[in-house]
Length: 427
Image 1 (cartoon, helix red, strand yellow):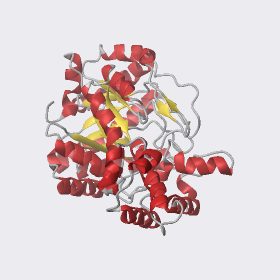
Image 2 (image 1 turned 60 degrees about the vertical axis):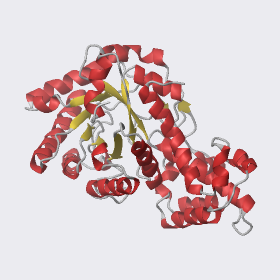
Image 3 (image 1 turned 90 degrees about the vertical axis):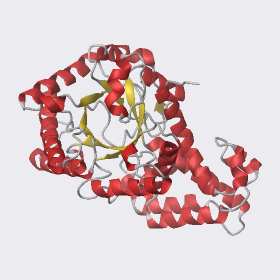
């Protein structure tokens, strides 16, 4: 695989040797650390890490990080783990007016242009141009021409920033046949892949407007299109990939030798499904909540183990603390979860949407996680307790007495499925 795998995706597919790349969409330090460690062990791997418009922007986003601070945060972890900065690609996801869609379009787009500029100046070289959402007074779904015109405005801002900074000219992703950042908030019963004709129109309209607006050279750096392959997860269910349903989409790529597809919301898909996605041209696989869901599973398993093993730890101290934290600041979940109190409780802690991930950086949550790790550090966890509360992990991890190893293993198991799929190994 070449040094920059993004540059070779379409060529490799055209030559009959397709490979994929995993896009890590998370700002959790343990997730980043696990991904960095795995990349550091494999000298052929280039790590793709992405931030979303809501997560990181010029105002700090919900993480409190601007684009330059996010890159510094990741590079600091990489430096500690021995991964060269040159082996990390930084991507910006859903870059557009989404964080400010309650404002008039002119105002929201001005902020979006400033955000894209900040991303490119910081060193982000993969830019998803997403101006699909309506702003104040506009329809929820905009027409293709308006979306493409706004995408061009954002691309112009990115090009100007890249040339002024002397950095690499970015590659672009267009299209957005996915829910808004954050995912859906209901059970999904029927999900259809993007119609090939709709994907064709997205490509054609963007080409026409990019060329008309003097961005023909930048158009040559559009490497992928976001479409809906027929995968998604709601709060309580996952829609599995059905390869036969996206045959027409895959066929369209045969007429577009310079393009591949980017698949969003691939979290919780099986290894076989992920492998099939790569085989069918969905070569950029984005994953985020699935990684922090696995982390939460491991933390809650350790929480139960500590409750059994440590006399003064308390009964599920971490879970009880997280409940208090989420109830005290419901902004990240209250409009996304629905039902009676019992249902809301289960969703707060166990939803596939994993909106609990927004709370791990809370100081109170941090103290609770730190205490859990401290009380189990050096403890030899019986194999029987590992089987009871962490059955998805190798039992041999318990006697190591290092809860951090258990947390990394949980995240790593998810990433292992993606690594295998990107290599074409469904076994």
